[in-house]
Amino acid sequence: MNSNSLPEWTDLRFFLELARAGTLSGASRRLEVEHTTVARRIDRLETQLGTTLFDRSREGYELTEMGQALLPHAEAMESAALAATEQVSGNEVSVHGVVRLGVPELFAIRVVAPLMVGMLQSHPELSVDLLVLPRFANLANREADLGVMLDPPTTGRYMIARLATFRSYLYAAPSYLARHKPIRTQADLAQHDFVDYVQDRLASPELNYLSDLGFTPRRRLCCTGLPAQIEAAAAGMGLVMAPPYAVQDDGRLVPVLRDFYAERSFWLAAPTDLYRLQRVRAVWNLLREYTESKPSLFMNTRDPVRPLRVGA
Image 1 (cartoon, one colour):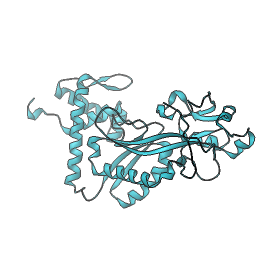
Image 2: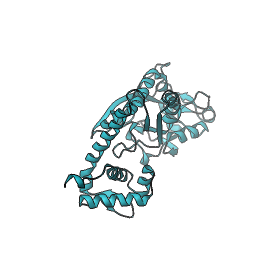
Image 3: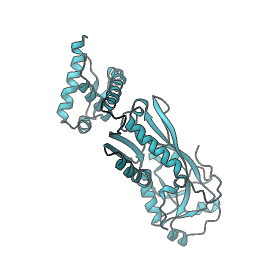
């Protein structure tokens, strides 16, 4: 292939977005073009390279072996283009551009969204796409530039740091406690109702807090996300396990058995090439500095506690 037949970078952008979205409509939304434009660009790229990059089906587009081989090279070009744009535009002084941040639902609502307000006021040229998810962001397909998760990537090139260690405690509504037998010891929990995660839809095995209580908990209502669990428990449905940031200080939920908790860690992760971008590092650093300064969001430091040994 001579230099005149090298693929255009714009065609490779279309290739990357289709690989990440898996459908023409998804890629067209990301690129803000018609889906026919995406199809035309991919056809042109495949003709130019003399190979098939995607297997087409009714379900969508899936990379072929040759498409998989092209992917890391296209990602390297994307990273270089982003870094060059930052440097040439003088972004070493002014943080600007869009950062896509993937965060668990309630953590986003109670912690991250309010925090972003101050940051965006300080950086008028910065924008944040906050992906508020009932699962953890898929960094492998570049769904987000960085993400908060319980299970950091174990393969691939990522920057990873512990964001915060948090403890989930037992809570219940005063109305529930008034209607049911008193809870004085862990053994008493066997007689009570629980609100928990849907067990076959766990975003991470780390969310299985109740597995080692010594009995099978009576799960009366299961939800795929913590916000719905909190609301159901506050309405008197049953006991729920949640970290302090998830429970507002409005009396709707009160602690139960303060001496028990399940301890986990949130991790911050970003693809190494995206972490080099100043705008990504700015959000990364803000999250780390804020969580380090607010330990009360993640654990109750007022009472002596001992861990409830749950999970593997």
